[in-house]
Amino acid sequence: MTTNFDFLKSTDKNLFEIITEAEKLYRDEYFEQCMTQTRRFAENICKNVLGNRRTTEETFDDMLATLKDKAGGNPQEKEFLDDLYFLKRKGNKSTHSSSVEKDGITALECLKRAFEVAISYSVYKNGPAEKLLRMQYDTELLVTGKKNKSLAQRYSEKKIQLKKTKQNQISTKKFPEPQKLRTQKRKHRSTKNGLKIPVFGIVMIIAFTISLTIIGFLFLTSLRPY
Image (cartoon, rainbow, N blue to C red; front, side):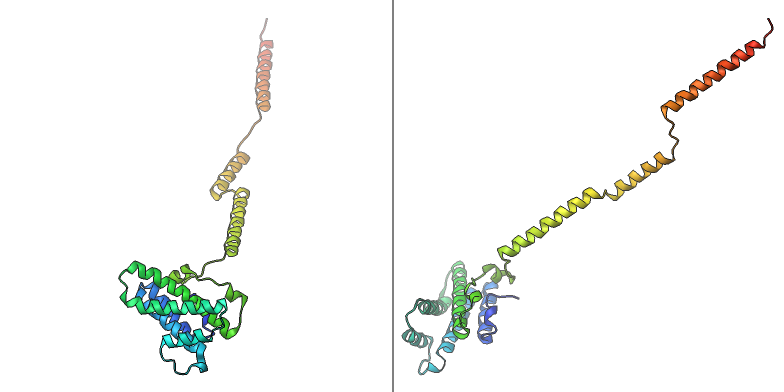
């Protein structure tokens, strides 16, 4: 099944498996567990980013504090840290939630924040890539496991479908239906084989018959004695 985090698989398989499990939990409506899983994802991201610079940090809070101290202050780093803090805070509170509907909305927000964190982490590991930076979280993909088609793809498919429809209409006009064709053939054969005598011919036959009758009558009359 395709996920929003497929791009992460080649960068860090462990992180990929953690966050795709969070998406599965969301689809099964285990929203609290989903938020807890996104917190776990964020914590592992922190460990990986700190790497060898990690010393006495044991808790998630400690690691976030160290990252914040080492941050350069640019907007991307600030957004990255804000998302990590959000995932930690919501993950900690997930077990105390009292509204299932609210949990669903918050869990989705956690997945979206985790997505942004994953992109930042991939850029940190592999460098910026235009395709990666243009990516947006796809909610339909989350629910269905099927990637949305781009507007260009949908337009192309619609164009092909219209072309096929037009071709079918032309074919229908050019070639009559089989039953209609058979009927036309039967009519043609009956016309060809039947005896068709023109009206002029009929008139000539009648005139010839009358002429013979008159001649015969005159001949018989001429034979009578006076």
